[in-house]
Image 1 (cartoon, helix red, strand yellow):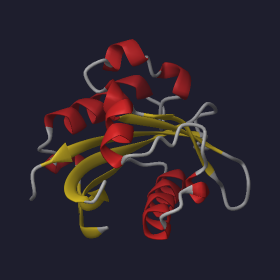
Image 2: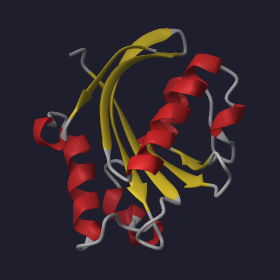
Image 3: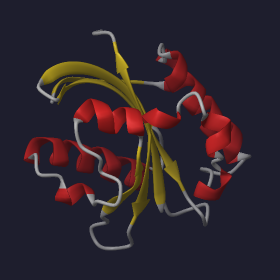
Length: 154
């Protein structure tokens, strides 16, 4: 992991990241965050392979389990994390990076926008992402929707 840069909802340049954030805002419907049941995969067909859906456990500290690792992401990275916990990822650097992102989103209950360089199958790839909190009770983050898109270097 190298050259991590955060951006904001106001400075989104990637059209699919903007679409995902706009979708999340619409599904909030006045609440702090939408629930997982508000997310309809059919409404996200154009992004589906780039989406990861994670469950957040109630452990202390919480653990993050991939309910879905998007097919485009799994193909590009060379491994499918569906059904696995983040703390089971063998690459320590990548595992710590992901865990920090998901912990932050669970704690702040706010989207996180990033551009960073990752090593996917031995290639350095720039990735633009938005990590979005979901909550079934409107207060506690119990799921996370992560939209990950290969991008041009900033």
